[in-house]
Amino acid sequence: MTSAGTPRFAGKVAVVTGGSRGIGAAVAARLAGEGAAVAIGYRSGREAADELVAELKTQGAEVIAMRADVADPDETEALIEYAVAEFGQLDILASCAGIEHFDALENVTPADFDRVYTVNTRGQFFAAQHAAARLRAGGRIVLTSSVSASRAIFAHTLYASSKAAVESMVLNLAPELGARGITINAIAPGGTATDMAAEHAASYQHPKLAGKIPMTEWLTTHGALGRLADPAEIAAGYAFLASGDASYMTGRTLQLDGGHF
Image 1 (cartoon, rainbow, N blue to C red):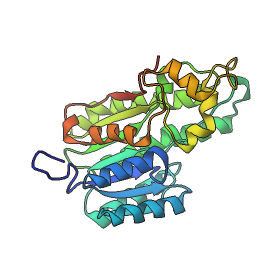
Image 2: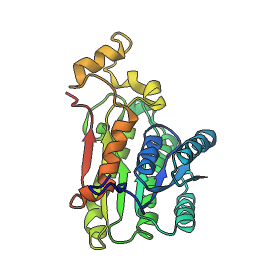
Image 3: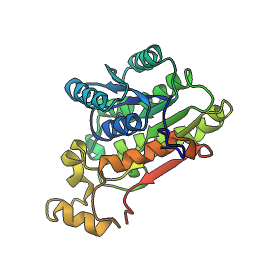
């Protein structure tokens, strides 16, 4: 809410890619809950997207969903155009779609490389491009990196480098977009309680420890808060960067990692 009690994103329109589950769903819910009209993009989670739309509509939100695989820039453009056609404008892009990858250097194939970079890097670049074409002065672009981009983890080079490229992307696009009054930043989440984390969390441990220390215990010795983040806690970071409170922040990556050490 603003000081006058008006929802912070009232009158704003947001597109959220990867918005059917995990962090993306939490971001869509947060923005809609604060008054934004939200267009949710998803690749395969149609049922989850429809359920989220229905839930948010019961709360009075304006929400739509559309299948849009960020691996295909044309589908991302179509999602953005759909949002503009339905709601009349675009003010915020929250680019949350991404895929995980763990494997040793000798096992990574060109197909692996292309798949990870196509979604995590290329997909976000063209999402920013298509959003920028529609954003007005005061627009906000929030991409998704990872704390892995600045942390050494066994067998994680492909994923981590795809996210490091995103941080360079926002740094270098900032002056270009800033000339138009648009900010671009990224969120670098740490461990978050999503289905992706449930599938891959153990891989973040050193190979000599994997399977020997329960994840709950490992978290207490590697993070100041000693737990995974709730997706809603990460979504709060996206909401901050999408808001007027972050009007003087651009080209930066905000780490939300629970005080990893």
